[in-house]
Image 1 (cartoon, rainbow, N blue to C red):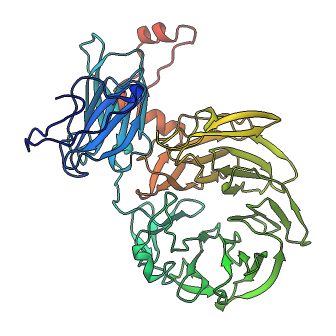
Image 2 (image 1 turned 180 degrees about the horizontal axis):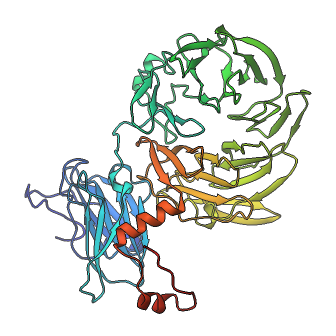
Image 3 (image 1 turned 135 degrees about the vertical axis):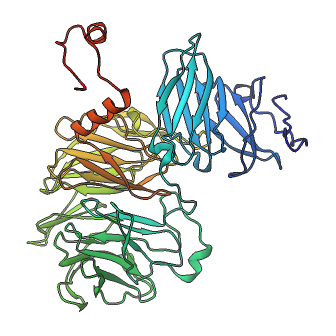
Length: 523
């Protein structure tokens, strides 16, 4: 089988010859694996110095490439869902139905991987096995939820977790409404009747962020989880659902067709609704609705000149921040404006005490401000330009020049490089940021990354939330439902000991940790 023509071993028919690429990207001589299953259509791949090229075996159409540094060994998983590659110093795994970015990366000490398999059967723990160099030992990596989290063929139009991660509002079909799910059991506990999409949205396209162009999928939970707000497209109003009683609670008045409604927010106790609007002349304002009573809410106040795509409200309802860089003191009505960043604010989160604001932008950076926008505190380390959320697609324009602290800097941009979700831990000391390659955790005071990215199934993370005790992080993605990440050190240590079978012996401790007194790690 040559690099320019491949034949299906089972169908015995020629595949259209793919066009030759540039010299650096031309397929190298050698075998070209054919996908074993038909789940995503039969494909054939060829390795190049810059990654993996793919073609449909039936039509010869070239699919999007998978960037990697000089891959040496390439294998499909048995069912054709994943593609594995051993590159120069790294193992890489892609999910082929969503190949924008690898779902798993693992650094190798040198080259020479000659055996590579992945057990991703239902119920299996997702074991990647390989042999390295001249070794005769089979090494095993446990990928767990990278391969085992349930993957929905339909992307979610919207997903939002409550502040403590107990509940999830999820919408997958453009013709339906939201379902409220218990994240611990997966059980549906309520179905708010308001529909966020027009009937014609069934033919709409879903964007990378998860929202159809013909849907308004803005949602909001109150911090206590007792109220849920969503857009009602049929009545052109915002509907508030009583989560505890599982019934409609209140709604705004109808908005004119020529008035735009942005991403609204609820007060922590669910008594007030804050709604950014834009009128036909482009004038922006934030409306404040009193929704304590059932039925039609009462518009109590309008703050002109405030707008943007998102709002964050202090827990004591004394102020709010808009994504266009404004802080409004709700006691006096005064507002101050600050440039949050010139690269597009994607998401914001206030710490529980309201003293810090985290801002995520489309270049993958996370910036911390004081909660009233008086000072920019710092940009957290480990962001995109420092390897935080890596480039997703080799065909994407990935080079962007920005100004930072008076100097010019080139930052890598990718299709899903932006920060898509933010949340503070209950004590405000830890910040979680979700993106396309997983979730990162920072220590807020030191700005240091706490751990390597938490593994996800590979789709963009749409919502993150800490449990009330801060020991668990809940996440949900574009194609995946709620997932739990244990953060408690004792539980993590017990899991490692269970997988290892035993702790280090005294001889092993002396070999690897000779400068530290011996401890029984898995007693």
